[in-house]
Length: 415
Image 1 (spheres, rainbow, N blue to C red):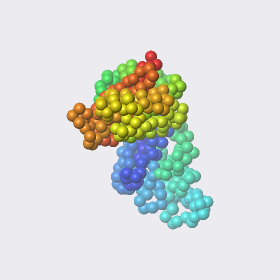
Image 2: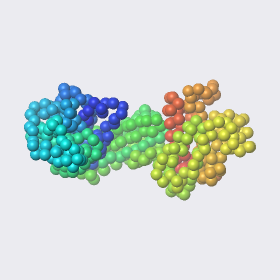
Image 3: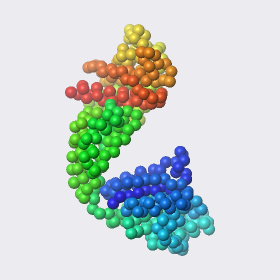
Image 4: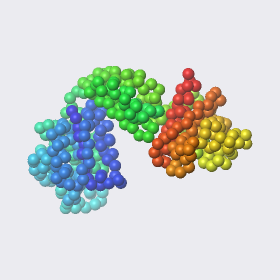
């Protein structure tokens, strides 16, 4: 079975609100082998909402709506569902009695317009709301089921877990969904797709999705079959081929971010790291310290934005080398990485120095030029990058690339 999710409410179309309900519902449905094939957000427009529901009911066996079940005139979900299904609505005093009881427990008097919430679509079953006043509804259709859930996340999740999940499981055919989630660094989206497309395009099951953001690419494989064993075997069949092509560009097989992957690598060898940052201004240190358990392997860092502070961290002899080479150089990156490790007592030092923009570029080092270095007692790795985009993007890419360079340095020393 496939599913669709419709979030209802004009407030969900503003930048102040995010539809987290659909993420929760997708996770729940996927756990039982149900693929969510369509999601949408519809404002408080009766005609648009009715059309959206009618399309969804014809396309998918499971249609879930969240929101629009309140007592006011702009709460249109009940009316729109009834219109889309071509049925009426009926007032149920027993449902209203439950709403009155909820108000009484809150020490409030129920308003007349709350009777709207006791209108059940003909043929619907009432779903009790133990966290609020808006009951849900369960409606069987010729094609499957339509489920109306309240919009507040706590009310929705409680209703789903108490009254919806068991009903859904009873409807579902025997099927299982298994996923594989790779995270990749060190290559662009188009290069990655060109490399792995000859593998995944041979399969309609599993479904492959490629998602990209600054310096980080996700590859999702989702296999759906009758049994968990068969689905796992299929996702593994494709996954093995993808892994062979991507090699050590894959830094996570379970969705962990790069900073957590690096932290686990450091912890496994009892090592620590410190950072020296110029153009990123603490962004790298923030990502490392945001990771739970980071105190075991992250010593701290130095924000050395000016030439004087870079020289002070490096000391007299190396400070002179920085002045001679220029702040955006391999020499400076190397000196700062070594100094970060030495001053903090860390096993590894990581440094970032460059031109984030929008000003400060030169012919030799245009905006977006960044040197990153990783140093230990054993070896030093330094690399020059040229990142595209505005100041924020350059800084983000620099921090991500520094983490990946540290990861690769650790891999090379391990060998």
